[in-house]
Length: 178
Image 1 (cartoon, rainbow, N blue to C red):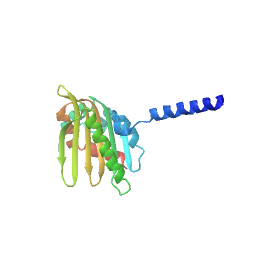
Image 2: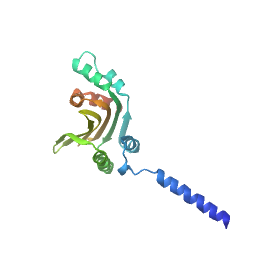
Image 3: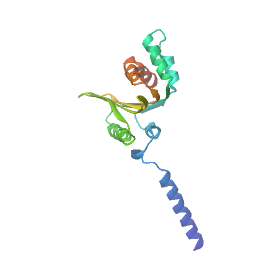
């Protein structure tokens, strides 16, 4: 009887430990958890690269790209999640959008820039202190899929526009989706 009780107690303790270690992705306070959760999903390409390596993609001959390369030195994190649009992963797209949207709202991000149209939506939410952005989540929802970019570091608001207009995002997507 005592051995059964001990086995039951150990089993109960292991179950409690397992449940407490399992994270609810809908309540996470870390984009890293979201990134780790979705990176192995069907139709998802997820990557994290040191921002300093992005400078290698940029041509040093263009002055605006030199400014962008300089901005990348102020970043500590550049993570990107790409979800290709398909009938099979529509549920993943909706779930991912809801999780990331909830994450930004729950964790003190503010709307920085929003464009909504019938074909595409772009939402940029930022965490900022004293006019310096410490983290940005950029979401592109379109007919071709869903792209999420997470930037962390010291980000000047003007540099977000430069990054989006530079074509670097498309160059990086092309490298990782081949």
